[in-house]
Length: 88
Length: 158
Length: 115
Image 1 (cartoon, one colour):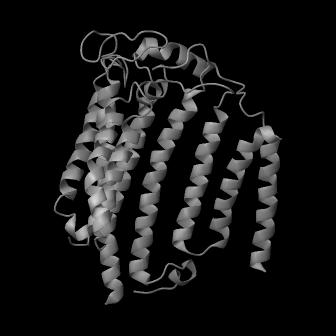
Image 2 (image 1 turned 180 degrees about the vertical axis):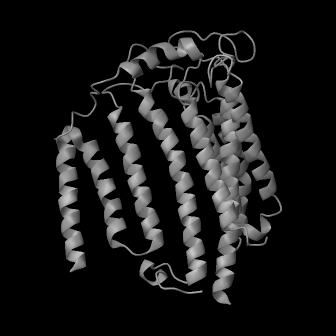
Image 3 (image 1 turned 135 degrees about the vertical axis):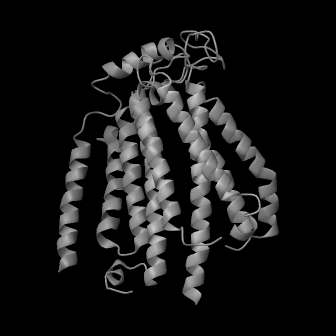
């Protein structure tokens, strides 16, 4: 009984996802792109890097990268603390 | 984890140096070609995982030290934070070395160019810091989980 | 409709992940489902930033005179991938500790109290 209800809910949810994916905007034509055009135009002038993605990751949005490095460090600390009773 | 057969160990001896050098190439050239600190660190970490799997977790304790990895990880994160704070005269994470003429300070040619290693200011240094952090994080995770797998298997048998 | 095929691929990947989370009881399979959902979301972000006939946003030896795809979704997807790796490592470690304590990976049998 529980499985039938779960299956019905899953089928309804999945069909909604499929319908909304078909009705989205056309693939390959982004509508709003002012910020990215600014980055493509000015990233080489302002940061001097050829790779626009790297200049966004480390310069324009460096604070994001700091939080992300902290998340990775916290995950490593969690794994080490989980196995701390295991001797070598 | 037991060590694998002689064929796999021989191929590993040939290959792992090239994988590590390729990973450091990706890290250092992160501001010119596709790549960067995260991707290159992941490549070097995969070389460590290859060594660990082919030699077994007992034998690989001789050349993969967990303490050195955790030391490098803290060093990389601290270097990244210091580089972020050192632009604080203007804003946080300001690129104070770009177009200044000093270290990594050449002005880039606007438009399509072959690429100059000595550009992009603080970005290559941040790439190296993050690459160091990511590769040692992968090493610590892989080594610790291999040790824990040994531990859980022993507990199951007893 | 065939032009929107990448969105359909994203939806199928996320749907398979949600199916795994709803109907499977093994902890390793639940971790695989979470990885599927993560990959679907990353693919969706990349798909939103694609521009037809454009090249990657890197100026080293780029073909001149062509448009470039949007760089911001790619940068944020890079962040998301590393966070996904960190969460996956933590999930698998916790699953290993659960297996050590309870002797099973089934979520129904983990539920009982045991010293």
